[in-house]
Length: 108
Image 1: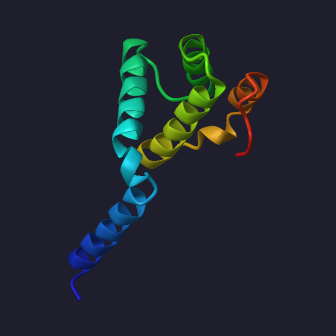
Image 2: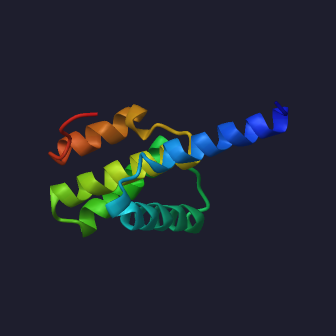
């Protein structure tokens, strides 16, 4: 078997696996949440790190009064950032503490 075709096959399986992590019914919402976050990051000329994540969720908590909506944003971004940038935001201790303080944290 050709090594290039093996790489292609692995890449296809990777894409299929990643696609299955985003619920089909909510795919558009996940992409929109991630796109909005990336746009905000670009406006701030920043990158994904704990400080920017906390700042973003402070702003989101002012707009989204419902803890459930803030939690949904966090879960969508957690998935998309992990898929797109290989960063696990659940490791950001300050962000997790902020979310707990907002009384929206249920589990990691």
